[in-house]
Length: 602
Ligand code: G6P
Image 1: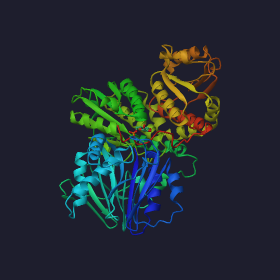
Image 2: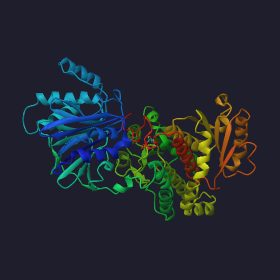
Image 3: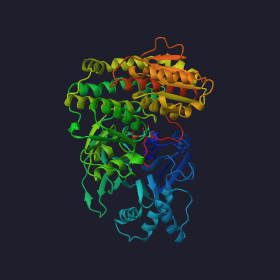
Image 4: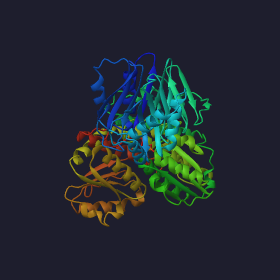
């Protein structure tokens, strides 16, 4: 969480370029924003609470021409999201922006207070800033003094960090380092950048250097020098970004979420096309493993649940799915026969990354399913399958999730083929071939989803129910709605509702029932009837919508597809219901309150 950017260049466009970069990083958090600019040899700070637009309005009329600066968009971890706690922080000679958490900041704060150093904010970042300054003041005055003081300070920090640092006595230079929070160095002509990710700088350059944990860099407008903690120079490769700046624009859509929903037919069909073309997904021999652990957070974990259902039901492999924040703190009984699949859109989620490291330490084979190319999880896993969904900007994931499901479906089909497990191949392959059209038709059916939204948007509570794979889809549908509309909703296994939760059903409580599996259909219908009998307003989403008027107040018809494609098409419907509902409620769809897209803290 939090996004950082730094710019140093001959063009003196630090203010403008940092604001542009921050806007592209806003998905990482939007509790407050700030910028530090070098102006006539001084470092001046400008901060505001709330979104980047507040900061932009605050500084737009100020006559600033600056060659160097650092900026930050914050998702608050320590200290309220107000102006005082906004980054950058400045202590003595040092100004800093930070992404991560300094876990031992209270101890360091006490140490500083014992030295009569007082701090203004409640943040761990200001402590880090003051500590670097404290060490800097004690450090012998030579040409390496600044790097040495950063290295020494960092050796005392516990936790995660990516720092952008400017020293007031060298105001045209940016120092940076990272540990467990991402950071890249953007390489331009007579200008260079630092950023949390490539999206921040694509308007200016596609060339970048990946800074590894424990590396320290000194960056001016025409030089980039990277060192290890012994100040030994490190030679770094320059990579070229494959994503373009225009992929980060709304391109005519009202919201990024809607744009990304509409991109699904193409990106999903790309994945299945690869699969149909018999391109190897990766070199892992899946059949060798007799157990799979899937580990992820949020929607990626929900994608994992769909994967579990498919792999167990069709490929006969036992699968456990666990949220990474739980997985990492348990005794994992891993053996050589266990494959650990890590799923992450961003490839930077802190808990997921930690879970991957644990699995590796314990000797398990690890496979990552990741969207962001070159991200930490993609780099550290034994094997990576990219989802190639392109940049996802809306905080609520859509194409990120469905591409993960498409990869899991492909893995399952692959295993079935290799194990000679017979299934309805012809139907499945026909669907995979036509997936683009199938999804387009579903997405274009917007009047139906608007109608559902009109019926539910004023309610405070609602339920999603389903059985089997539909239960996993309910979880994702329910999460989508909660995230962007702020309505309370729960996903329930349809048969479980009567074990308590049915007491929450009142007159008019919406119950969205997903029933895509023919064999389980009648069971789910009985569960819908149980809720109807207690006053529920029922919405059936199913391929089987004939003669449903006695138990469904609204029926949304789905195409009748195999379970390899069905989760994707059904979730498109759920995404659009959530989108239309949030729109009617006037919510900030792309940037829901309190959330951030990339969660790089525990
Ligand atoms: C955040 C996002 C979710 C996402 C989760 C995991 O909570 O808001 O949409 O599913 O992180 O992110 P990842 O990048 O690891 O898939």
